[in-house]
Length: 201
Image (cartoon, rainbow, N blue to C red; front, side, top):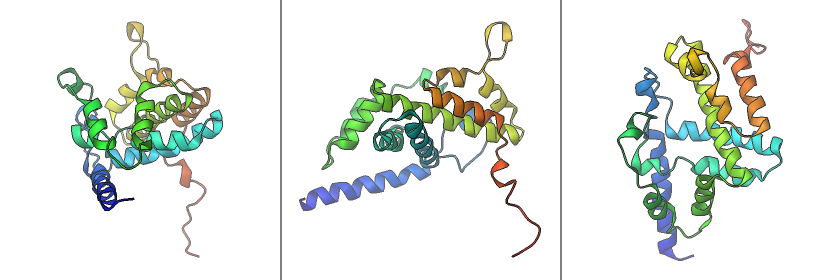
């Protein structure tokens, strides 16, 4: 590789690092100041979820992982927008993807994010399911902290006010649906229930 290609990769790595500093904008409408929820932390758990789903659904884990890692990368340049913002803001995402990933020494990253956005392959569908499931995890965590807005979000409203889970309805994979149901049935602190002790070793 040429020196300028290493330089371009270095620039991209610094750009990727800024994902840690981009807060997710649903905090405005979720009425929370959770500063730990940023684009990088979200993408990390989405990636772990994606790996599990890829194994359960017998699709290419590498492709799913890469799509999960990249799915929100354009937000480094456009910022994150909640569903109120999206009503008023136009984002030139194709332009961002082309300028952000299209001139890297390897074309794989641009191909992964394009495939994710097209949502035609099983891997892309699984990666999107992982994105939705991470949001369910976050909402469940907020509910246990007493956030009433998160409780509304996680349920949605059906016809005539009847509660239904709109988030799970958006999940397309069988394994994703089962995992989402398990998340909604689980206490967010249950992972340490059998680990705690009052005695030091």
